[in-house]
Image (cartoon, rainbow, N blue to C red; front, side, top):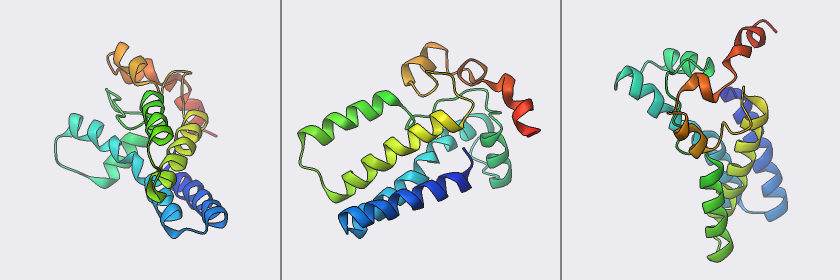
Length: 148
């Protein structure tokens, strides 16, 4: 999904969380994590282009599924499962509550809003496909999607 979409969704979710919990900490942690989880896209960028960050190229390549390898270390149903166990079996702070909700919402919207295959957000699936972008995403639909 594009950054603007994540900002809108994260702002909406954090507003709802504030209305439910009356906590700026829950709302702010949700807002920040919902947007900045995408920082893991930098790993793909640096893997291909080195540590020469060009912001315009970064967004062009990230939004166009143009990386050769897709690692997305933070975008993982398996990591969410581990995080869920942490939430269930430890005292939950307001920050963890906000991050947890943002994590779920972010992954769900990415799964729905991107050119995802059913297992695109499984780290094990990506690993078993050698992180090859063309095997992880439905990039065959990219040309059709850009013309809409």
